[in-house]
Each structure stands twice: as C-alpha cells, then as structure tokens.
Image 1 (cartoon, rainbow, N blue to C red):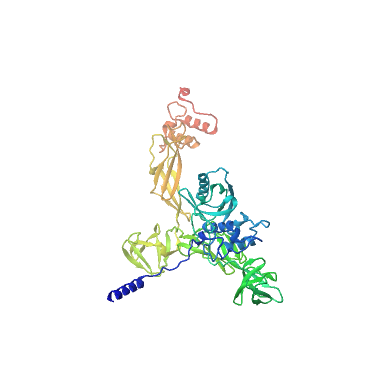
Image 2 (cartoon, one colour):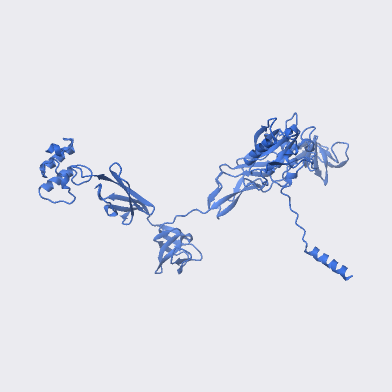
Length: 575
C-alpha cells in the first residue's frame, strides 16, 4: 500500500512540474497548403473548375507569394482561397478555359513580378534540369514547375545537395521534384519577390510591413423588395434558414454558381446574388514599398521619391494611390531605427528607416550652457579627465579652441575643456577661411634651398580680417618647366605659390625678379652714380659686355624693354 501511495505521489509531482508547451501559430503552414483543403477547396473559378479539382497552379503561386515575402504568412490574411477570389476579380483566368494567366497572377503584390517561362528540351537530363532550377533560385527567383507533362504544377521550396525539394499542393505528392518522372518535368514559370526564395517568411519583408490587413470579403446589398431567402445550401431545394430583407447589406465570403455564402441573423448559409448589388468595396489594408532613401539624420523629413502606396480593397482588388494618405514617424528625434507609418482610411502599413546624428562642426565663439544640470569644466578634452569646476546652466562662455566636440575656455580663473554637445552657439567668432602665400623671392637659382622664412603667409578670416601666419608646414614640389611650386599648410587650410628657377641670373634682370624692366635700368644708373643698393645683382648689369657697368648698359636695357633690340649681345658678339 505504501509503495502504491509513493508511486502516486511521484506521478503527481511529475505532472505538477510538467508545463504544456504554448501553442504557436505555424509560420510555415503555407508549405503544406493543399488545394483540397476544406477552407478553400470548393471555391470555383470557372463553370467547371474548383481549387480542389484544378487549382494546383494558383495554390503553387500562393505558396511562392509567401515564400518570397510578397504576402503575409498568416493564413487568416492570405491563402489560396483569398488569392483565387482576387484572381477572379482581377482577370487572372482565361474566360474560355479557366486556366491561370501567369503574368497577371503576379499582380497581387507590388513586390512580386513575373519573369517569363522556361521550356526544357525533350531530351534534357534530370541533372541539367536541376542545374537550371538551381541557377534561378541562386539568383533570387522563385519557381513553379510543370510536371506530368502539364497535368500538374508544384512550387520549388529549395535546391540542396543536388536535390530539388518542392511544396506540392496534391494530398499525396512527393517531397522532391523528381519523385515525378523526369520526362514529365517540362516547363518552369519564373517569379521574383522581395526575399531570395530560400524559405523567408512573408510579412517580415522589410520593404513593407502590413499592420492591419483584413481578409477579402464581398459586400452586397439586397435589391429585391421581397428580400431573399438564406438557404442551407446552393439551390432552391435546400431548407430556408432565415430571410434577408430588402436593402440589407451582407458580407459574402464565398461565391459559387451565382450564390453567395454569408451569415445573417446568426445563421450561415447561401443566398442567390441575382437580387443583390455589389457594394462599394472598403479598404482592408495597405502595402507600402518604401522610398529610395532609407537613411536619415535626426530632424530630417521624409524624402518620398520611390515610395509606392497600394490600397487593398475588400473585394480583392488593389490600387496604387499617390495622395490622400498621411505619413508619420519622421522627422525622428533619436538615433536608431525608426518606424514610419503610412495611414489611409483607418488602415496602416509601416516601413523602417535608419536615423543617425548629424555631424556637428563646432566653431570658436561664445556659447551658452544648455544642460539643465550645468556642465563640468574638465582638465582635458575627455570625460575621463578630472573636473576643475562646475558651470551653471545658461552661463555664457567663450571658446578659444575647438577639438572635436570639446571647447577650451577659461572660467572662474580656471582653464579647461567643456563638451559642446550641451551648449548653444550664440555668437560665432571669425574663423580662418584661407591662407595667402607670397614668396619673398620671385626667382631663385637651382642650388638655392627654400625655407619658410623665404615666404610671407597671411591667415584670412571669415570677417575679412588677416593676421600673419608664422607656423605652417612648407612643402616643395619638383622643378618643372623652370618653375617650382611651394605649398604652405596649416590645419585644413593650404595655399601655393610659384617661383621661377634659373641656372644663372638672366642678363638685364638686375633685381632678379624674373623679368627685364625699366626698373633694372634705373638700378644701373644708381649704381653708376655710386649709390649702393641691396638686391642688386652686378653680374646681370653689364649687358653690353664691355667689362664695366655704365650708363650705356642702362640705355641698352631700356632699348630691350621698348623692343629696339631683340636681345643683348652675346660675349662673342661683345668681343
């Protein structure tokens, strides 16, 4: 007895510790959709065809719409029945045969497109067909395959290790494509959606996210003065469940042979639609393709270029609209991902953008402390450095040097750094805008070494003022075509100047400024009368080559300047 009691206690303990798993919606249910499913199998799309009977093609495309992320995975929102109703409302079947129109079938979603058919050669091998299908899957397409020589259609799930796995809508269909005879695998229909067709779940597609999509339903208003009967089945031979009065509005969830399935006054049955008028469809949801620009700065407004808003109506139709909707979520005030909502007639869809902080370039000037807690003055431009003192909010300070987002100030007798992210510029100081570089020598000889002392540099500010620039980096280029380029750099600013380079000082250019001018003749005359001058190059003054500097040299220089002589005589000519 004690042993039995212990066993019972142990069982109770095990049961008390066991927690039943929480049931979750199967996001992958679409893979197992069958055309014969009772939820949609009886829906007709021609006088003789139903989904259960011949709906393998539309069921396969429905699977691929979800598989590629172009339709939501929730079976309550999208399934072969909903898709069939949409196809019927949007010309998706040939009227004479009831066959699906492959290109029109892609129009259900703005993010799903048809890319044509591929017909295999009659002698193509299984390996060749596998390779062809794999190439399309690898390029991001999704594929419907015609098998049984056109008697059946299946959707490709994936290609793995040389095997083509399929999602078959037939109740007892194989898991692999070549469970069907290779000779009967004859044709491919190629589509493309937002995802790459390797098992991504619809509804998580970042190019649109449907937040409130209702199932397709058809609204009808009863037009018969006597109303119509709601019957237990299709036809007048079935029992009457209740009467639907004149002008009543009903929701039809399924249409077959001119009869509509509806629920009225608590009864679900069928009524003839010969005495009913289709009501204006309501909006059941939105699909939004986001704009081209999906990266924004804080405070930046939406750039709508490339955005497409598609309205989904209750009767299965859809329409792209360009106005009448509202957009919320931008401009954003925080860094990170931001949901942007598009709303139209009570229905919304959203897409996600990335928001970053605008890079602020701080300037020297007067700032006011904006932080409600005040701001610390630190010993260095880092939060790890010691605090020198605290500065109260709304205090004005003068920043004399900027390093990133830190500013150097002097406050209460202490010099340190503050973080400028918690301040506001109230008066900007003049900032350097350019360097003006002037060489002290217009010409040099080839053996001359130039340094910063051979140049005059000015720093020009935004208010037009200037000051001498004494600290800069001088860079010299190579001599080219008798010219050398010198470049002065200070921070982000730079300027260049050209200097002529000669092997020897040209005759007549007595001040060595690179040209022969009247000033050179005047310098010669001053030299003749005994007035010594700095920067006078005697070796260039004896232009007539007589061995002495005289007024004759000054006269010849003037003749050269005014064009009376083409050149000075050579030493040979002078001799």
